[in-house]
Length: 282
Image 1 (tube, one colour):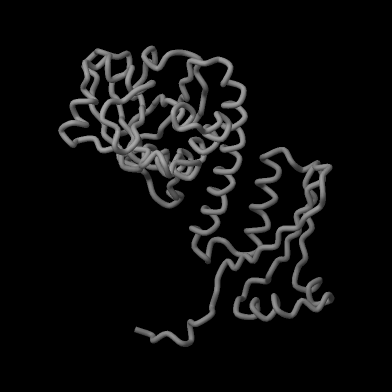
Image 2 (image 1 turned 30 degrees about the horizontal axis):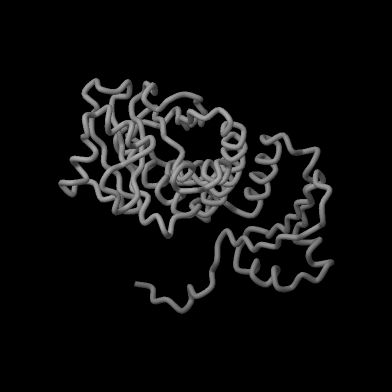
């Protein structure tokens, strides 16, 4: 999926679907949602009055525009209560919107920037949260199955104020990095143990670094079983005794920064035999 920023009015967005938003309890929408409501002859206000749209966090209501807008359909996305609204709410709402887009087989969609108007969130923060929520919401582990749903190919953040565009671009870039890295971790977690051995994990880590073009900035050091025995790494080796696959100890050193040094230490168990002997055979 490609995420792009469009400097134009949301009323001019021509695509499969346009996303606007609403806080819970709002009776008469304003801003971008209000502009869309006016173009649709008050359709959103009428659905609010009838209780079809509540604005609750993550609520999605999709309906056709019948030619009143350049987009074929509109989604009204609930942002929840305005007094408890922040970055996490943008993520959650955006994730719900992404799931709804997937179910509706939408190929391209545009959205207003949730929270950057009346929500009072800075454009870079709002766009980062929106990007993270969208990418994480679209995640699906389908390595071993075929998905019948269409992929969302293009996703546009539509913003009229050109002064906000640089901050939005910055937020989108950071949000994409964070979310895609989370999805890589999810892929590792979802892989069956017989297909992600320590040796294959090592290979995959090196492939990711190469694909990202970071070989010059990230030094990879891998210790095998013999090297760990020399260093008397008993805790790791004792766990590894439960498998026929030899363990790996992987150290990644990022060489590109100039700030203070810090370490992140994590444990990756591709298969954990703990407790198996305590479970009944049936």
